[in-house]
Image 1 (cartoon, rainbow, N blue to C red):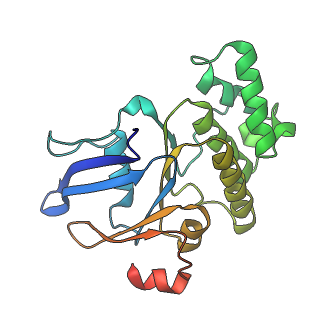
Image 2 (image 1 turned 60 degrees about the vertical axis):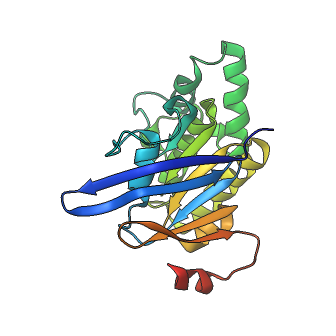
Length: 225
């Protein structure tokens, strides 16, 4: 029987005299949206960066995820300005799919997020909301098992954020992936997450674990942070 959890064990990280993580363990549900919620500066992004290998763990005993299994949705879109939308998407998948399959997959995601009419546009001609939708497509074009999202809606206006989150939710209904999603925004967590981990204290610990089906209010969760 396949394991239903992804265990991350023995995270340790210090910055000079500040011990951020000490023998920290966390287990994420597979094929679910796992939200890491906490105050700004509590170590959420550092946790993702250690898990993804962008930041080195202080000890050699870390049990984590193979980097090749991960795709990343960063706060900034990181699009290549001299490539158009379609080229920006296809460059991520060209090693994994033949030409015809890649064309179909590209069009599938462009349709799903409602920006197919922009496929020949260059990034500098597009709004931040459309650029971030391209960023999301790029993460899902890559055949990863895990999608890491670090505050992906932080710089997006409220109207576009709602559209993008609805797009992402539709993608996740059809394309099951394990998602690790960092935010400090409770409404984002309640809208997208299946499971919410509230981090805090120093060194960081899991203060609360919430299954997002128990109808807690924003105010009740705020008190836990």
